[in-house]
Length: 253
Image (cartoon, rainbow, N blue to C red; front, side):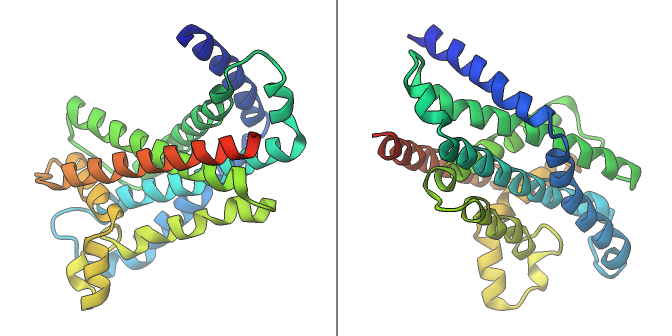
């Protein structure tokens, strides 16, 4: 059964990946907005923001990486919605394949596409002066958190991809997710924010994830932020996975 599922998922993932490789402009477009934000903040606002001994590009890169992922998952919802409207799912369900493999193919494709976008953003950050003395274990931890965050948001994207009534509705859900890093420690220290905004910023998931990534990349102590970040990512992933599968069963029943 497991071999059947893995084989079907691999074939279906190959199909969706071919769609991505035929339209690489979607990946480039996903990376353009975060890169533009990074350029603007570093070269326009960076000189006015005090981040201590950490250069501003190093300080704000973790937030840009999360924005990159939030931008990229909108295409997952878009591709899934297109398959639902095009009748592809009904065709697959008439074949002897694992039904869950259809969703996992879109999730794995999202993961690959977002990794490519993240690499592009990292490349531009290096050109802008980003440097890190982090060791191998720290880089592996950074990669693991980004992958976990990508999976969590991708399963969120699956829900509107299955339930939206229009293509705009399928992708519009990502806008609040892109905006969330701006009300966090991603671009400025939360201590500079007014009371209510500061309270929200310090207790929303992005702040703990950003603080953890920043600490790992700058070789600073991450404290309890790493456990808070992992708890947020894992919690969102589990809840989104359950709701996505419930929506899927209702849609195909």
